[in-house]
Image 1 (spheres, rainbow, N blue to C red):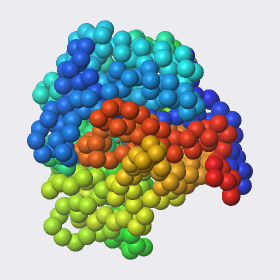
Image 2 (cartoon, rainbow, N blue to C red):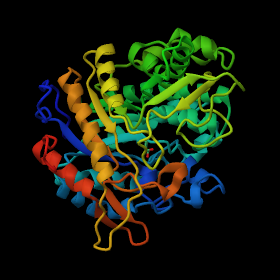
Image 3 (cartoon, rainbow, N blue to C red):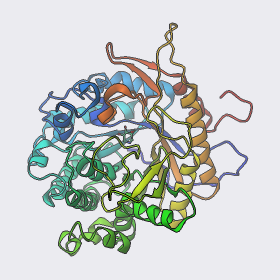
Length: 485
Ligand code: IFM
């Protein structure tokens, strides 16, 4: 069993290299790549239901086949090995291993993850398992979903099943990926599964996701060897006020509260922030929602904090109709996902945009990492996702040239390197994504992969950025000035 290194070395600002032992990986998520949606006992998750509902996902795309990773995992691991990847962050499909979200596990489902992790270990690649990347078993949603407290207990039971099944071969575990999206996009704006638009349900979901994380950390700790590392991955918003005005600062405070501190508060500091409770008191009864002992569960120590970063969040105060201005980069909806933070407008940080219309600004990643290092010294960090979608295509020569992605990765990796030089204890970096895949409500229209997937044939073509990344990994350093890389 391999874990990530347990110490860090600060680098000098002029050096283009990363600390010895820095982990280089790539990430995917079950529903986005696996396919095999109805094989070996798997039952629908909320994303199967959502994607099969007309009008929810662009072009009516679904994850039924996706990148067919379920059947092609051996070739995909071989590809990872060719690229020199040291770690692979994948997620487990809950309804593949525990179809109804309760009761005994299905061995055929577990076997897929046993085969995958064995293949990785054989190739010398560290498996990093995420338990939940948004695909709640549909039966649990039918029973109330994340707004129901019992879902957190179901999750802890599932975590125990997974720890028992894979604890001998997986050394790094993540409970939840981006719970903000599960709660605020799933139950607030409804652009993600299960597609509900209920402010109270959104906040209840957020608390129960926090509780699920804490209970799962307990279950993992009880069932994993002491060397195993546990973590959660948050998509922390790097919130910036548009101007220096007091009104914009207040807008930024409110977005920071429901975007970030609703998770970092209880998980890292053992309490919900007072300002968040005040901002949302008219929407939910926090005293009823948060039971005695919940905060102690939620704030159980973790070994690593996963940070996902793509683009900064620039906000200003907006007088108006009550709801936040919808154009926040998370998908169109008549309902704001920013429950409890009304009258806020969202802006692009600049006009250099990816295919998602997200502004490219690597300084946000540096600010996030150094900010966390300052606010939570001693907490090791891991960049668990970073990358960009562009309109990639295969040239007549059969190549995929993606200089914009190389530039994006270069600037963001340089920001990570600089954050390490400035004292942040960053243990590794996972490119999002290994493969082009199902980009949620955008379907297959957005390509984030370092490896191009021709969905018609399932042929994989490593893009120029994959070769560039392989060279960075080989050197444990970015190309120097004047070098192509
Ligand atoms: O594809 C997603 C991933 O599932 C979670 N983080 C953001 C990525 C890009 O939108």
